[in-house]
Image (cartoon, rainbow, N blue to C red; front, side):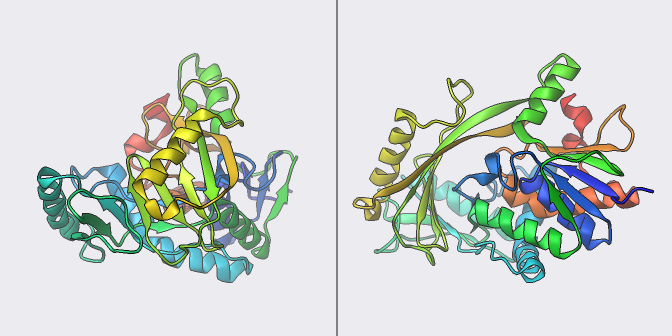
Length: 344
């Protein structure tokens, strides 16, 4: 008799969220990852949980909104269950407005946000704060209240503790038992591509840094394609590069130096903040650029949860919910564009 109902391979954002959601429904869960909790891309340092632009609505944006909307309750539940803080907070985001055209576009999006975000969050044009803001030629910024942040490593530890508190187990090696969910990140996409004989997904390298600058209660900033994310521990993360070609997956170089330079130019308050960590890793991007979740075609009892790329932690609450419903109850609420067939 099997002692495990669900084996989850991968202890990153997707794998742990699926394991947690399954355990909440009463399933006996085992998470297996040779690298341990947060050993891959989910062990990074940026943690920007930011929405897509509120326009041209589609299934992916609706799914992401639902996930971001449930984030506060989700992470509070994880923390209460496992007793380990996730560092989650909905602190909002500021973006500079460059000119009159950008202002008009931002104001139009404020109207669509009111409808698409169901009146619960705002996307608004405001005067740039004097103490913490990006450089903005107009003196104006976009402020949205949907964006949140968390420290990825803390979030993984929080999820792992919650899974264990619900009776689940973590292992570096174990045989498959019960249903099997493959949340194996960049390595998993490479294996799928080799198996299918075509590109199913790719590894995209990202480099980021952490500064000793305490802005923990302030909004994150997105300016000149750079995320500036204040964390609860009194550090501020800067990220990141997007590299399809690279020599080594886990080293940093002058490309990170360029990101840091753009961050310092965009946010003068960071000028004297020392760099305390440089990080690099591989993020999984599915061929369609949407997450890849659902039943594994031609492999009964096996499922895939992969391709989080830059939005993995932001959508993790919904990933866990819909995958637990599918794996345990056979209820399929996954958008067609997300299903493995779309990438296969």
